Image 1 (cartoon, rainbow, N blue to C red):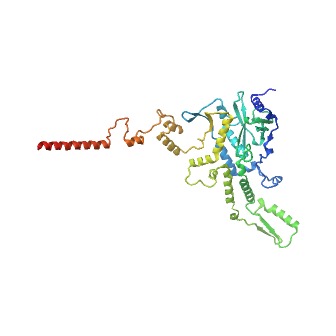
Image 2 (cartoon, rainbow, N blue to C red):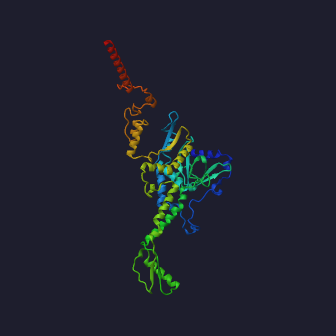
Image 3 (cartoon, helix red, strand yellow):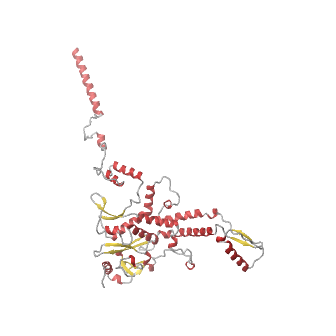
Length: 460
């Protein structure tokens, strides 16, 4: 049987584990680590088809906004390959034929932005992201594929080696050499990014789990409100009769009333006989406090994701905060841990070692307004921390001749020289120090006194 390059690499990787691969591997779900992501809202809900599943839960606006905000913001941060100069301590952007192509284009059906978004959607909703590597004949990674986390099973051998069982149903998105329905691959061929590992070190728990109940509660409030307003905002009521009524008559009247005076027929004129009366249920908005309940639950949904509520339109921005301050707060609380994890995992996956390293360029996220940028870069150039051309480059302006030099004004001198008056001027200046002027005046005064004494003596 002939093997393609990637399949041979995979087979050789499995054989390198020797007898460990032949031994029975234990799925993590059988050792108490795998937990269902979405639980039923109450016992027996699934028998009644009332369980809340992930597709339904993500239709709640606040939860969708939290996931979308993080996913899209990380999606727009491009990969950058940088090199560290140990002599100067400066990181500079470089290209490398072994790494740059896969960083620019991860696979044949996604852009780099879509790849990063798929990575984050899997991590935030399922707690785990599994990325399959494809290598060429040299063993260099040429393609990366984000897998469905529900079809990947971590497994541990008797000796502690980690493998992943892949149930690949949609093989059209993977290369032809992975044409099997089930694959077992070593950990070296999988990038596994996971959220906080509460139950097992190989199983991450997503923030969606912590936001589950607040989102379910608000979904039920929205569903109840939709049903209420679907009834033309008319609450239910009761029909009463002065005399006794058999159960059959009561059910017949109830069915007649629901068919003719509820839903779209609400508000029609009803004619009641036998002295029957309809009493509407009263409902006060102050008693239900729907707005306060939903706002409180919305804030609870934001907490696991680390997103400030005002970032997704809940509440108002604190007084005194500027756009740059908001972005810094959002970056440190909601994005930084995911960015660092992605950078470190890609370094390991592509076997990138010092002095090279992968970074996600955060400039598109932390971009300041024009006035703030001008003030910031003007101060950097003035304080000799940047050259004029570096500042012009930030505003997409062409460089100037001599603009690569850092300038500083000449009147700045060390304090010890100023105190000891030992300043050596580069260019002679006609300014006479005050001490010299005083000494000259005293010398002239002594000479004048001596001349007067001499003249007085000669006269006598």
